Each structure stands twice: as structure tokens, then as C-alpha cells.
Image: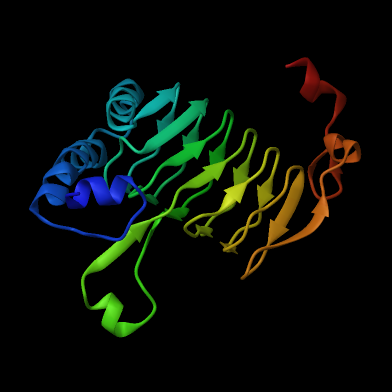
Length: 202
């Protein structure tokens, strides 16, 4: 197998000229995205649609960085705020109605722990999945191989190294579940601050 085939099979691979050639498309498109008039929402949306492997009504506030773009599959209404980085060596699958605060980083890419193995230039990619209706807080890092369930909130500054189950609020480094999201949470918009009656009439 060549290195692209090894990478796509989930095997250790070396970033050679063929691999770098595939990255050029994403670099051109992210350059275009990151230098587009920030008030031209239609142009930004079109570039995002071209960049990502799959999306429906996705919007990304530039700057944004990724390795390939075609390995990112986003569901309906995906939103990523400023300075999101997705190292999509392997697939990154994001469900419907997901939101990411500024400075979120998703890493499928990694390197061996032992220095001899790492210095061999071999690296790897392991997929990341994020379910529907998730909110990823600012400055969160999601590590290779992580699966985040549906209806999950990840607190700001978290480093997610292990899977997070459905309907959870999880936070910390390493990120851990602190409680489940319940029906009672529907009444509040921030901590103990409840929605007013007029809010639901707008």
C-alpha cells in the first residue's frame, strides 16, 4: 500500500509528497475562507460547503484550519465559531445541530509515544464522532478516537480523551461527566436564570 492507502486504512503512514498534494486543496480553500470579507456570509457559506466532505447549512466563522476538509462530515445546522482547528487525517463525523465555541480543536492525528518510533516519521489518524445537538465549549480539545454522544455539553477548557455518553454535561482535564441533562434543564438559559414567558413568543 502507498501512504495514502495506509492512512485511509487506519495504519501508520508517512506524510510524503502524495499526502501533501492532497492537503493543498484544503490549504487553498482555508486561505480563501480566512481572507474573505467577514460580513459576506453567503460567500463564507459557499466556501465551507466546498471545503467540507459533507454538510447541510454549515457555517464557520473564520479563521478555520483543517488538513483535508473532505474527511469532515457535518450534519444539519453545524456552527463553528472563531479559530476552530480540525486535524482530519481520519474521519470527523459531526451530527445535526452542533455548535462549537471559539478555539475548539479536534485532533484525529497523532504520533507514537516512543521517540524511536516517533522519529521514524510515522503518524496515524483515528476517527472522532460527535452526536446530534452537542455544544462544545471554548478552548476544548477533542483527542483521537473519542466518541461524544447525543445531546452533550462539553464545558469550556476541557480535554476530551475518552468517550462521553448521551445527555451528559462533562468538563475538565481530563474531561469527565459531572451530571446528566434532565427535563428540569429545559426551563433555564444560564445556571438558575429561567426563560421569561415572552421568549417563547418571539
